[in-house]
Length: 305
Ligand code: CP
Image 1 (tube, rainbow, N blue to C red):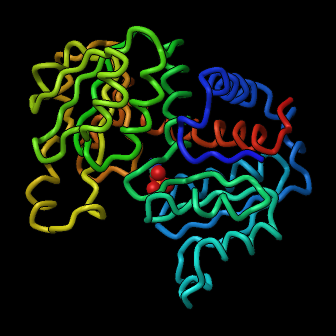
Image 2 (tube, protein in one colour; image 1 turned 45 degrees about the vertical axis):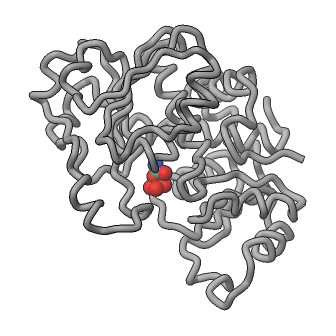
């Protein structure tokens, strides 16, 4: 019985296996096209999504399986007051594997305790988004050929950005990783991330509100959206939302092989003019998300080839 709730559920060797499988799927898609025949994936999305839900669905279809599910809670019986655990227990009679997004932290974990099929956390509140992290790791690996010995800048909403916390957790397992955290003071990286991951593992990091000063040192720049849906106060969101906007000018002093990443959706954080820069990797992340989710489905269904 296996679930994926958090990136910490995976060992480094399992992450490496998933990256290898995803790379093989990219090169040999025909090997995998019928491998999940008669298997069903359910996507239960209680919170909006474009990339995660559709890439899971495309992943299962490309593996030869099929997909059921809902994309908004108001189209399910949760709108009548049914609990998440009852919903998931019900769906487990119809599907072989479930990908679930929910605004409440821990909802997928609670659901996983009442099911007979693997549950994948497709994002739970501000807590965790492990499959985005896997997409990010695959992208970094394909861009750099390694996951070690890099200076990684995170910029924007480092407080509520669940993809940031998960990626720090995953990358910190590899040697020679250093971080530059660029954010307004209201959106700094949480203390528990510093204590439990960075300080505990003696990982070097800098906290700053100045993007320009540290740009030349970065191998990766991971931009993030200020997470409006996690703010209690709209006025604070308005004040902070455009704190950092990456433009072509700001990249003037960046390395020639910088990788610019963003989990998307973007609002204003990256000028569309940057999209044509060869260093822009955020749509590669989107594409890689499908391949790594294909690999994950195979791992959780015990059909690794
Ligand atoms: N990156 C990400 O989770 O995108 P969606 O919200 O569109 O799924």
